[in-house]
Amino acid sequence: MDKILVANRGEIAIRVMRACRELGITSVAVYSNADEGALFTRYADEAYLIGPAPAAESYLNIRKIIQIAKDCGADAIHPGYGFLAQNPNFAYVCEQESIRFIGPSSKVLELMGNKMAARREMKKAGVPTVMGSDGHVDVSNAQEIISELGFPVIIKPSGGGGGIGMTVVNNEEELQEALASAKLIAANTFGLADVYVEKYLPDPRHIEFQILADSYGNVVHLGERECSIQRRYQKLIEETPSPALTSRLRHEMGEIAVKAARWVNYESAGTIEFLFSEGKFYFLEANTRIQVEHAITEVVTGIDIVKEQIQIARGCPLSIKQEDVCMNGWAIECRINAEDPLNNFTPSPGKLQHYRSPGGVGIRVDSGVHTRYTIPPNYDPMISKLIAWGRDRNEAICRMRRALYEYIIVGVKTNIMFHKAVMENPRFVNGELGTHFISTETTLVDDMRRITKREKSLEERLSQIFTHTRRAAAVAAVAALTQMRLQRDEREADS
Image (tube, rainbow, N blue to C red; front, side, top):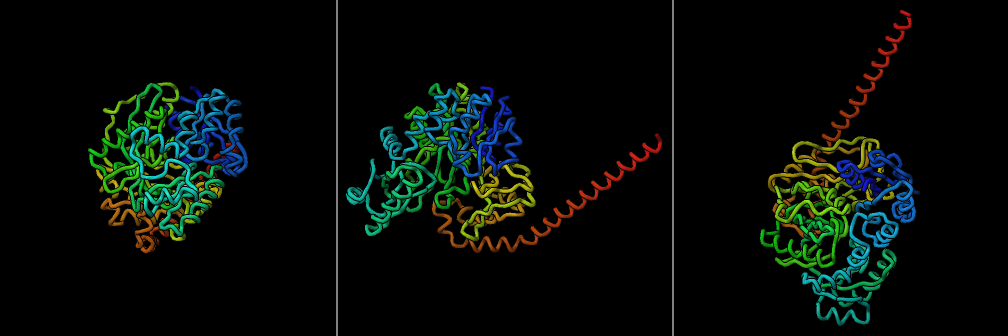
């Protein structure tokens, strides 16, 4: 495998390309009109325009991506996360064209991408699942199923992900409308109207286990990540390890995750995800790709997950065994997005007038932006992933507070103030987490306003520093140019 096309954009494209560079593999970028000149296109060894800004005409255009891969001689395609990463049809076309899809097979993607099918397979494998239906639910059979479960229940689309279409039903009066709504959203978004029902757990923790599996039957887990700080089922803060798990539980859940991956003949990197409530855990879903939050596991274990993923695709066995995996310290990730947390997290695309990322001991920043970069309105508004490592959870939190304090972004609104408020929140500091943390912490908005007021003068001073720096640089450039002209004139006079 000598050349990999990265069918993605932004920070994950750069992350994959960095792994390629370390492995001596040529990297290829594809980009839309909106991303022309973006950092990932410059970092790649080769870059090709794929289409207009809308994702359907560019990053989701399977035919065009495959054609570029064939034209440039790419041996493999890495899908990153999002877009086509979990699309079985894309993996199938790659297989038919003899291009290595860096991920599980199209068969596994299809099986695990259908949540009802995945749920049935996990029950066969002996993996604990939440009480619920094993098949499609509609008006004719919903009441019978729910009478056994009891309210509240949650209706979930069988296809897709990201929490789209998921609807909580608290009583019988809400049922018919909720079913119709969930089916309509599922059909319009995923092309599949099938939905199923599970018993609703009021405020569980979301805990996932990172899996690596090769083609020789070797499967290991790299420990867990706590992903409970979510908004509308979208993760905002992750950490590893989870403050909720004991060593015994970690071992038990890890073994179950490995068992689940083996059962479906999984190959590549991925996650087995669980809901954790009242000391018990239940299978939620499998994410058959590299995760946004994989970096915190890399920081704690020292294992490069993306390089392992590429090596697996090359046909190499895993470079590690389960006994080699050692979790060192604690890591937290904050997703830094261009959005306004005081205005219902409304996206805030635009030009970054000033950008200064934090650094120092224990800090990692994965981003695809720079000063004067324009965040387009067409895609997810992520600016970066900010990772803080510490010897224990308290040190990781303190380092994250310091890093957030150092992070300067001028030109767009960001959710940095939200992350600052969470890092100071007593419940978060005590590890009292749940998937409804944001909605139940009613003081977060006031805390964000307080922090914004407290640090406004700092941002103003830093903005002045940036302005002064630019002026000083301009003066220096003019002086240097004048000196060069004087020297030239002197040479010409001597001659």
